[in-house]
Structure formats: C-alpha cells, structure tokens
Image 1 (cartoon, one colour):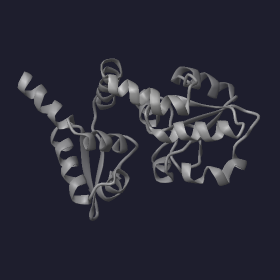
Image 2 (cartoon, rainbow, N blue to C red):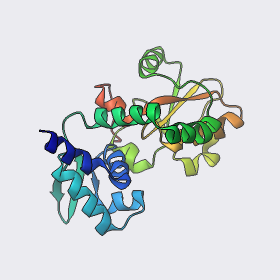
Image 3 (tube, rainbow, N blue to C red):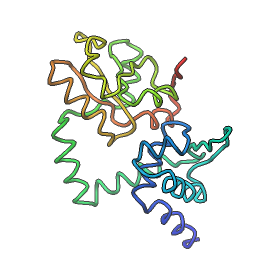
Image 4 (cartoon, rainbow, N blue to C red):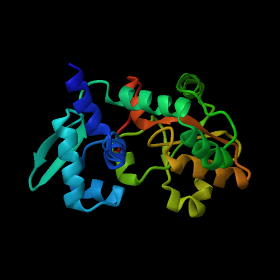
Length: 212
C-alpha cells in the first residue's frame, strides 16, 4: 500500500505537472493550448500529461485530431489544496514568497465563498473574472464579467465604482486576481478578491454558468 501511495506522490512531484493540473482544472483543454499556457513544448506537455493520466489525476477523450484533457473524478482539488496548506504551514520559503509578493499586492482579507454566496443573493457585488476568455467560456461564476488582465486598462468603464468588486481567477495563488486588485484599487475602485478560484467554486457544487 505504501508503495502505491509513494508512486502517486512521485507523479505529483514535479512543478510542471502541478501547474498543468491548475490549467486542466479550469475546463477541458487540448494539449496544444495547455502547452501554450504553461510555456512548455507540446511534446513535453504531452509527456507530463501522460504521467498524470497514468496516475489517475486527469482523463482524456479524442475530438477529431485533438486529445482533450480534463480533471479526473475524485478529490484531486482537495489533494492539491491540502498540499498547498501544508506548504504554507511548514515551508519558510513558501511563507516568504507569499508575504513578499502576494502580500504587497493585496493586504486585505479575501472574500470567502460563503460570504460571496450571500452577497450574490443580495445583489450588492460585481464579479470580475480575469482569466483568459477561453477559460471563461468553459465555465464561470454566475453573472461574472470577463475582463482578462491585458484588457483591464482599456475596459475600466465596464466596471462600477459605486459597488464593490470581487475578482477571481484560477485559484488561491493565481497572480491575475492579485494584480487586478492592486491595479483597480490604485484607481479608486473598491475591490477584493475571492479566497480561491473557479475550480474550487465548482468543486463545492455551487452554481456555474457557461458562455452562450
């Protein structure tokens, strides 16, 4: 049994595979797009994905000439969350990075999922999804406005200043939401970020929408 546990741990023991799991968790993607997002070659991306598939962390299906990858069933996100929490608690380097980089961008407490659910019911918040538009199309929080980070500066008019904004992206350490918060707060917007991201929201069984 311990040998099997160790084999699964070895599959996760590579930074590229952990990053690919974050991208796959946004929705079903072809190898080519995952390679583009991760900055790896298609061959290297495919090799890492095959390792993840053999470990049972992702599943595949063929769509014409493309092989599409999606997150496997089971508590994959919970496992990654536990790994992140353990690292935050026990790794001085992780804590230093979090404080030095993320802490400088946003010092306010993030909005919890439960808080956001209540505020969405009250209609007193604007949701901002700063992921790329193809990720938004695969699924997003109900009523969210999609403004990718590279479009934020020229689309400020799409955002209200009279209502608080909650920004979210791929997960708790996705830099996009931190950067959006810092940029918009500097321009006078009332904005906070969600404590995690779209995959965790979906995994919790909360409502999601797909692009028309």
